[in-house]
Length: 360
Image (tube, rainbow, N blue to C red; front, side, top):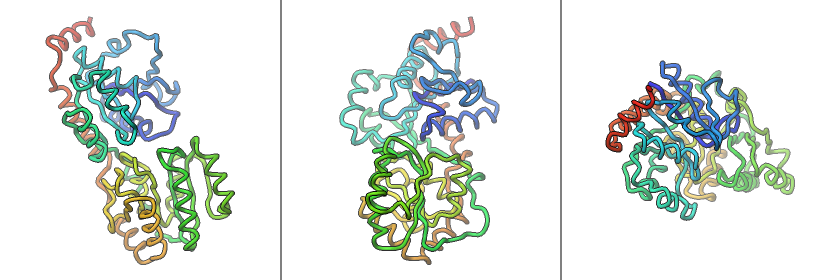
């Protein structure tokens, strides 16, 4: 099968969509599919010959690619991916759209896009990376939305060596330093908890909020307790996880939470928002602790830091029991999504006409 993934942004930009599409394309290629990624922004060598960087002046590129299925990956504002999905569906190419973000607390953007683009009338199959992400898509579009979760390589993130729990306990966060990911609330939480118990912390990641985070840490005298590393490769993140007592994921508007899943797969107890997609794979009291708001997450973090026995109990569970979201499951659900897309209604005669055009 020839699969064309479409995304507005791609590597070397680092984010949830970029990494997921890269990994998904590589896994599909490894199983024998012919896979390409089309993006507005991408490095020419981001993933070898699989990448197609599309500029505004290139016409007819979609028919030239001749995919068997188009898989568009969208967030809140994804004009290229959504326009390509609409075009593909109109010419009869089976088309799936996966929503990777939460369509909440962004004003009327989703409704405006729906009305301006006529998204309710598109012959596409919709999906989202979690039930939390699917709910607002169903509400906005009034269509069925499948769940096709993100995934991690469970073999890569499996814990290694004996568990160590440093003293004082060490908190790790891995995230883009942005407002949506809540970089400043993260350091405020660390400051509040650090005033009540001993801890050290590492924040892995980069982004537009990094300067503000650094100034906050200096202003509050936390630079000797909280370390900023910038962006790290996955092998380096794995080493950081090996020395973490707790993983803290502060974002409420997290549609899934790949970094938190990597921590969970590595055996680290997770503290996260009960309102986010992280609750898809973190059961309160079993895999970690969940809080309803910032104060609740701070309280849960304080509980874990102050209770070594509970930390050990959760860590041993996480090391012994693999999470459900490995690539085998993700590939199976994605294949099912493509079957649904192929069975979706299409404009009368368009698919056959398109095929005649594509094959000459």
